[in-house]
Image (cartoon, rainbow, N blue to C red; front, side, top):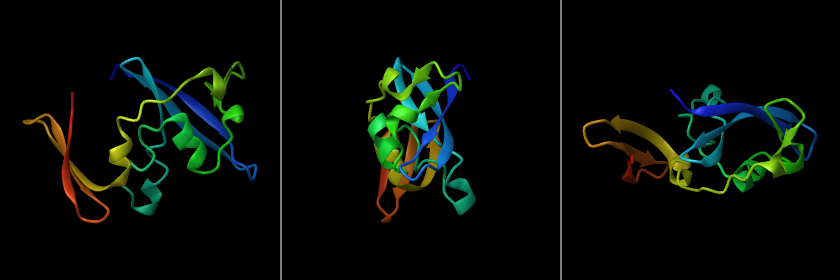
Length: 119
């Protein structure tokens, strides 16, 4: 797909370890964990396009323990993920890609319908 991605992982405040993904889109970094909620019947967007602060909050992870690329050379504070453009997608309970209009038609958890435009 041509998307730069690398494995990332870290520890929570209760010493639980977990793996997720760090991607770079349009020169911005985002944390993704698209499969974590799927076992619970989720849509894969709850942990999509996260900032560093979002990733820390979701699971009480410790930024200093983020190991980027499993190489023990790049750590969470070395990568800045601050772009919030995907934050609205995390409340989606149903989505449908509309290729004709280049958008995602969304319904959020309280039933509100809205559109996420793809650029």
